Length: 92
Image (cartoon, rainbow, N blue to C red):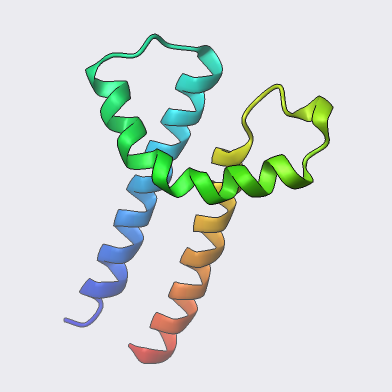
């Protein structure tokens, strides 16, 4: 019964990582804005803002042709997911 919480958390984080990946691809390909890309941006952009500041501060200028903040966000989510799995393994 208690395994529902870790499984649901992992599933939600996996779905969010997939949305971030789709958003990254859409921004690299430069898809024109429409209803779906606007909704996706409204879900992803708030999480990207702190990572964008970090990437812009520490990434070399010649690498900033592409917005690497979604990649940094994916790495951050993966590390957070790993930590949550360790905590859930102890608790449940």
